[in-house]
Image (cartoon, rainbow, N blue to C red):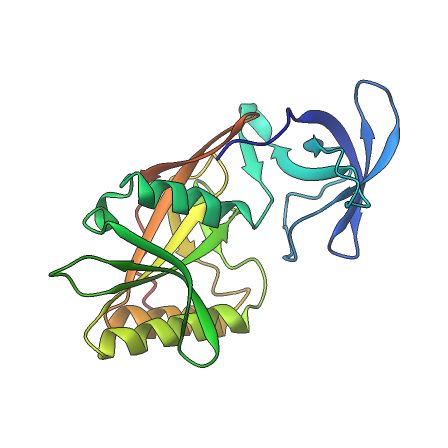
Length: 239
């Protein structure tokens, strides 16, 4: 997934009202307001003064002329903050059969209705194989060592998705929860049970029911975001 226009560097002043961020452009010193395409807590990724990367646009339909895409981390690492990007990255990877665990499917259908008034991110189909229902979650929380963690705040919707995937397994289909780690300094994934105990419990129940828990890292630079290698997922079992 390539960004449509070259990114420009800025320094973050503050993020507020969830979807807005004030920043100062590095090249001109101009203070601007950017769209922050992320409704989550963004723990560790919204510190005042941190270097961020913005995508400019000249679309007359858009009120804000910059969109926040990346946060710069220590040691040259990057984190993607746009929660709309993972589905685009995964869609490209599915069509290219670049995710080994899902490479047996040639038909990729996005946004298919299922469960209780929900839409699954992707339904994968292939003659002779069970249908595969896949949800994609954006991950960009890191607090200790190289652990990526999900979620970064309470997500009742996320827990509902796990239950709906488990229901599809009960009907004889495959179901996958695919966590895409949108930062380059993580090597494994676990659930942030202290931030959302209910989600961690739902994770355990879904996995026990046969939902496959997959995680992939990403390759991120200022040109775009691509799916990276598979990462191990902690068992999640509470004991």
